[in-house]
Image 1: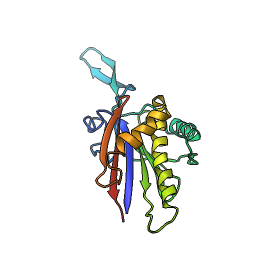
Image 2 (image 1 turned 180 degrees about the horizontal axis):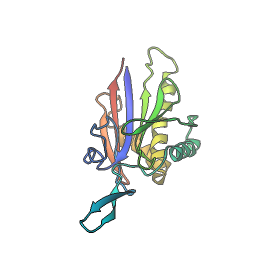
Image 3 (image 1 turned 90 degrees about the horizontal axis):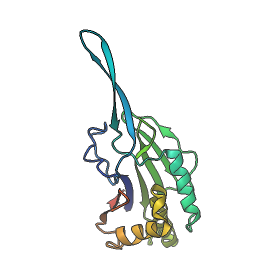
Image 4 (image 1 turned 135 degrees about the vertical axis):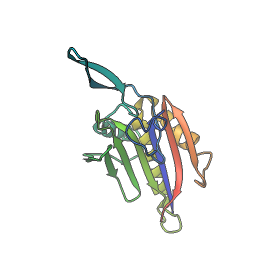
Length: 204
């Protein structure tokens, strides 16, 4: 069976992954440049008196949106596509290093996001689509088209500034067209500082 995964993450996230508190690179995700900053306070002591200095450090790896904002952007994008996929009330689960949210549309389609503890923004997000075999299901073509359309909605939700036409072309032309049968599909492309990675995997 085949599993299609497309992800988005800030450029430079894998390069600076250890500094951001996550030493394990995530499979099939992408990256974008970061603009958010984290203010920390560092105490320094002298023989005369104690002084406090404030420094700012970049939050390494953020898409700049919260899970709630992503849900809103997903639903807005989906309304302009021939798609019935809608997200609602995502639940965020706390983790030791980063928090996680997951939304399952069907047994074939889901979205998983990883959230920075520092400011609650998404550090990376991925869309998973399990192919339906034509041999086993006469409605496979329509289900698979829905899955690929969902991938375009995903891109438009991550970066609404792209517009639906560019988001659709990014998925169907730039990422998918080089491997139309999905065999050995492993393609990466960058748009507006965000890197998108589409990969085909086997699953039981």
